[in-house]
Amino acid sequence: MPSSRAPIHALILEDTWTTGARVQSLAYALKAAGAATVATIVLGRHVDPNYAPAKRLLDAIADPVFDTNRCAADSG
Image (cartoon, rainbow, N blue to C red):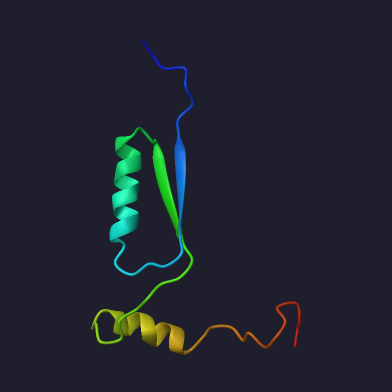
């Protein structure tokens, strides 16, 4: 017999991403409990500068692609 209940879609808001273990565990638990989809939004991330794969990320953010001191509506 088909269920008449609407699917459950979960959103996880994570304040800090370090290893991702907690978010992955929570997402797994939500899926196991019946959630149809689980999405995560991370508000912050810790990066270990001594971890070789992180170098590419650190290099990318060292030279920003926009100027935070300039208004986006300014045509100049």
